[in-house]
Image (tube, rainbow, N blue to C red; front, side, top):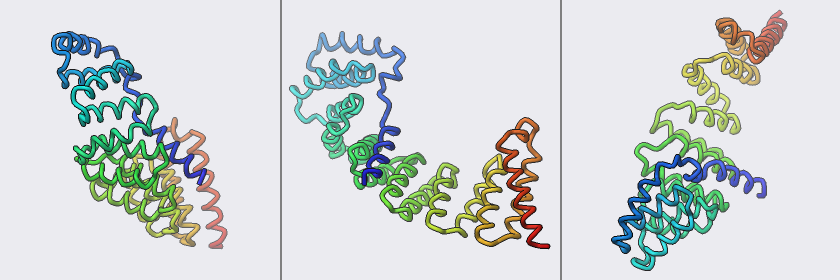
Length: 279
């Protein structure tokens, strides 16, 4: 269980949105100053307060942003837009658990808001609630048009960590039905098939990957090794020969690399072994 929680925390740290102020380039000061002037004349204008709070959040001015949100709360308690701004502010402040209530309030009003569903899924991962993270990723996939492949892979990683590789694989297949046979989905699907012992499916998927990738030699070698383990020596021999041909077709700068030379050595050893077995 501890290893599983560490895994979830690793995903969360990798996926939680980078604090936007870290990416700011100073282009928001003009907009904030304009809102300062407007709010000096109209201090109770809620849309302007919310807009300034969000821009201040983006600039990393968290205390000023919080004051604007508190002002909105005093003027219009339970404003859902304030909950959405506050949720992102709390995530930026590394107060992920505190953001959940605000995300829930926002999503009660806007249940199909994909960005909020994704953020809540990431927060659920951070606090260790994998089931809710899977649920929110599923909803985000439904409400994204189209869904990004990263949503499918993130959900699959959680399911695999929970010990549900078959469900993880089906989720990736869903992604490929929607988005096409993207390599970013094919490769984790292949790893899941291998972990499930679905060797015939894995061989077929490797064939699709080999068709799609520009550099084929490593994938040909990997399929050859799998075919050897399956006892399909003739098929493996064909792939080893194709590996050698693909390596030799590379330009010298790539052909002479250490990785390619290792592939050629492996191919040579395997071809020699298969020849010895034939004799």
